[in-house]
Length: 480
Image (cartoon, rainbow, N blue to C red; front, side, top):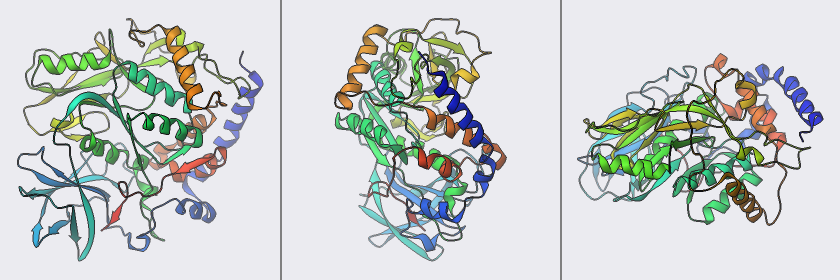
């Protein structure tokens, strides 16, 4: 039974906070700014300028023919890239590409900073362990990372960086449902998560299926903070970086509240069949509510899956903030709703990946194909499903969310996992942080740049015991 008093109190709290959001969005006071800077990469704070490149990675990419160095960075719009030097050699940067295809990005034109990658001239020798990058009289030494030399059988799911994330139960469901559909590996990054969420992440990391990396704030100067003018912690940079890291033959780009589900069977079997039957298929994109199966087109390397809504958390709700009910998983409601798509792709052949699709393959003959909803679909489990779903129609065909297992068995499995993760306990569950974050960011289009850390710090920071990302050797920025 739902505690109506608790829900009413939450609603009043949301209304009170909503009135304060516009001023918080644009006017962080000095105390908040100082607190945020404690969790930023400040080694090169005085060096950040409007012309700076904030470099994340240098990769040597043998997938390109011939091979080249590729530099991932956040910066303002520019056509000037860095040169690389090592062992007396100098290699020029010959091309700059905005990861979302344009700078500024039309979706968030108010963001002054955006994700780019820089392409070097050809280099066919043995790559060094590190290179010196030089630009406008400045230089910095950066390690060189390598893409996998071979790709094993498997299916990896990549996600955008987690920020203000406390929904440990939804996270467990993401892992468990995805594994039911054959996901063998996950690549995730975290900026700010609750302690309970970190415990869940550590559990799956210890199982050997999760590659977890830190995603810290970028360096800033006393007069300039790029983090306050880049979309969602540069999620586009994280997406493209995942294509360099993944070593399985199949990968997808999902949010934690999304699942790519075929009409029958497991997702991995669906993908394997697509790629084995047609040698030129290397990916697929799944849009909201529809999914088009790969047909007999020899040059397709991807496909798009359309989007529908899955009522996963009803009646998964609070009971005076201490108990939760998983019975909603036994009676799922699927609704039609259009929205942006998501991609399944083969990393070995993927040159550039946008938020919702593969934008470029190494071979120009390769294509991405939309997949019709009668074969598979992208299911989206929104936290604000209840408020948005009144006008949506039921999905007009069945989808088996739990292949080879009954919903009763799945509920028991999830409960068993919860007890294992939390040492025999069922922790308190609340989605209040999710709802407050949604309310905080609902007016982001006024600023035309979604900046969840700076915009929502005062609202979210007191709500939980947050763990913030610190720069790590494998996940840090370099200012040039």
